[in-house]
Every structure is written in structure tokens, then in C-alpha cells.
Image (cartoon, rainbow, N blue to C red; front, top):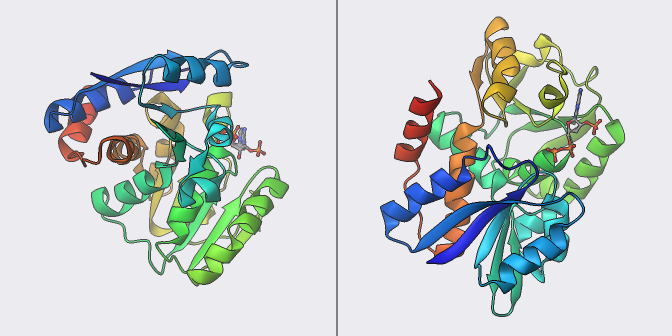
Length: 275
Ligand code: ATR
């Protein structure tokens, strides 16, 4: 068996082990995937020990995505743009860092939810690691305009600056804004903040939503409940990040194994468990 894990803190509630177990069964790949609880000050030694023990790679989650990126010897373009990694592959030549979060989000929004991003107005709320991981792949879908709004506006501006060249190339109007001054009438509103984890409500006003908008929370489970209720209250279609989780896992599985598993049956199973 080839060993993999999800490394994070906290990590005990992660659904990644069950997702990868289903992918392994489906594809016949000899993959064993566990959880690795990493002390907050010890990501480097923990991952080194895991790799030295013969593991082939890992996913990295909160709060280690920036550090994981910094530990790699080679990176994908999308990880370099985010300066954060959620996927490491331990190769003979060194560690390869990738970021599959954006591809996972785009696949869930477009293929699973049936929402085409091209030509639309998009609001990305938040400017931490979660937002950084998805901004590049969102721009590549060529929305007409994308606004990054954050409580600390300087962090939104930094993200906009690091993605300015890509936005020009994709012909997207990319802007930074405050939570209060981000405007109205967005077709797609993405919540990439940790506000709900800290007991906060939805950090933007209902007026940000255009008629018939898709309101998407990158979290799932109880952490997404407040945002989904807010979406309903304002007449938008709400969607949580469970599909993004399954899609980013499939993309990581492909990075490791070169095989693309089917996501629909796994997402259906997780949804059935959640109901
Ligand atoms: P992650 O890596 O999961 O994105 P993070 O880097 O801590 O985590 O970022 C969390 C995001 O949630 C940030 O955009 C943060 O805003 P700041 O940059 O101003 O810190 C946002 N956030 C957290 N709590 C919030 C709250 N109560 N209201 C609004 N935004 C909040």
C-alpha cells in the first residue's frame, strides 16, 4: 500500500480519509490514507518524519498551507500563484507542491451546480489561505469582474496585486474592496472567510446578491449553516463546500496516481450521510 494522509490542526473531523478510501476502491489504486494531527509549531518535522517513513504524499489543511508551499522543492503554477499548497507529492527528486482547491471549487460550481462563471460578476469574500487558493482558477474562467472583499483591506489588495497579471491576461476587471464598500449585484458570492468559526455572522450585506445569485460557502457542515440560511433569506441559491472538498480530493488523487476518480457517487454518499 502507498501511504498518504491529511495533515492539519484540527484534523479529526476531516472527511478526506473516507473520500480517498472510496477513490482507491473505485480505481483499484493501492492507496492508504489517514489523518495526521500536526502540533501547531511542528509542521516541518512532522511531514519530514512522515515522508522518511515511506509515505508518498499528503494533503495539507488549516493552518499549514503556506508553510507546506514553502517546504517544497518544486511547485505547480497554480500553487505558486497562491503561494500556498494543499497537496504535496514526495518524489525521488524532492517534494512537489500543488494546490487543487481552486480546481475543486471551479468543478463544483460549474460542473456540479451548473453555474457558468464566464462573463459574470463575482464577489470573493476573504483574503486568507482559502481565498488565495481559488483566485487564480476563478480568474481563468474569465468572469467579467471579480471583487475581493476583506475585513483587512490590505490583504485583499495584496491578493489583487499578486494576481494582476493573470487578470489582465484573462481580461477580468479585478478589484479589492472593504466588506462594506464592495458594491451590489453579484451573480456569484463566495465566502472564503473563517467568520463562522469565530462565532461571527455573514460579513457582507444581502444587497451584494443579484437576483438569482449563487451564494457559495467554501466550508461545509455546521460551519456553513449560517451562510446558507442568509442565502435563503435573500432569495439566493445556497451551496456549501462539500462538493469542492470531493473535487479537490479527486484532483489531488490525480496528482499522486495519474488516475481521475469519479466524484459524483462519493459526493452523493456524503450528502446522504449529512441529511
Ligand atoms: P484561511 O487560511 O482558512 O483562509 P485565515 O488566513 O485565518 O484562514 O483567513 C481567514 C479569513 O477570514 C480572512 O480573510 C479573515 O479576515 P482578516 O484578513 O481581516 O483577518 C476572515 N475573517 C475571520 N473572521 C472574520 C470575521 N469575524 N468577520 C469577517 N472576516 C473574518
